[in-house]
Amino acid sequence: MKLLDVCEMIVDCPHSTAKDEGKGYPLIRTPNIGRGRLKLEGVHRVSAEIYDKRNERAVPQENDLILAREAPVGNVAIIKHGQEVCLGQRTVLIRPNQDIADPDYLVYYLLSPKKQHALLSASNGATVSHLNMSAIRALEVELPEIEIQRKIGKVLAGFDDKIELNKRINKNLHQQAEAVFNKYYELSTEQMLFTSVISVLGGGTPKTDNPDFWDGQIPFFTPKDVGAPYTFQTEKYITETGLEHCNSRLYPKNTSFVTARGTVGKVSLAGKPMAMNQSCYALSSETIDPLLVYFYVLKAVSSLKHKASGAVFDAIVTRDFDTETISVLDCDSSQIVLSTITPIMDAIHNNAEESIRLVSLRDSLLPKLMSNELDVSELDL
Image (tube, rainbow, N blue to C red; front, top):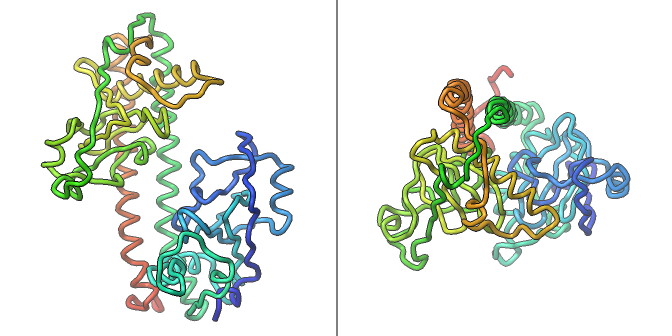
């Protein structure tokens, strides 16, 4: 069949960009469409009036699919229970006919290597950067019987459900840790210059035209790799030789990184030892525990952003930190805070690592389930 045969509607969404109003309904743009689920961290938001106007053609519902027509072209995500969203530019709303196509199955089916290749290849075999509606509607689909679809969909959705749960747990845990730190921070009476207790360190990039420096095992942190709060995987990796030929140290686990250019003012923790490029700063201290450094950095960056309110905040330079003052916890308060936040941050780290393993397992099972290499007919789900 064609994709259009198994969907009640396939709607090409608005071709204009709504302004981010900072509150209201999530506006789903192509960067918010992940591989299976919506990515709502930092999502743009719009008013009820804009929501109604942009959804005149079709109001997104639970179990609808949203597909990205442009970068990241071909990504598909399902709308889960309670998600009221507004359709953004260059997106496509797909509503499966659930008597024929299970929504969970269909989203993973469209993400399978075979279907992604079909979506992303033009008629001449070249990779496309924009999906035409005619190609989307005409996409050929081969579906097993509906009960098999539901079992496969449930298996794969279970991984994403646990990943989403880990994200919610980690967000809550991070809020708890920050609340504990803030309580003692606000009680502190000792003020010190930020750079008198915390060092601002730089990074660098090995020559990009030397293959001996790249595709190694060392994560190479850039502004694209900010985690929440930990970063484990990076877009690029360097070799030991590459590390020797750049101006970055191998920064240890729990080093705080701040993005200085590009996406400015984002803070992330190294989930494992990694190097860093020149568009970021690494913050460390010889006298303060790395986890406390992280929360001090959050305070300093928040202050920098506040000072830049209304101005163009396009870069952070080292002298910005030189002028920042922070309240410093005394030894007793530091120990009390660390005894509380260390197990919390360890739990966040472990949950994030588990999610990475779940993604890997999900992605390895996906093509096997879609090709019937793994039989689910006897599974009791």
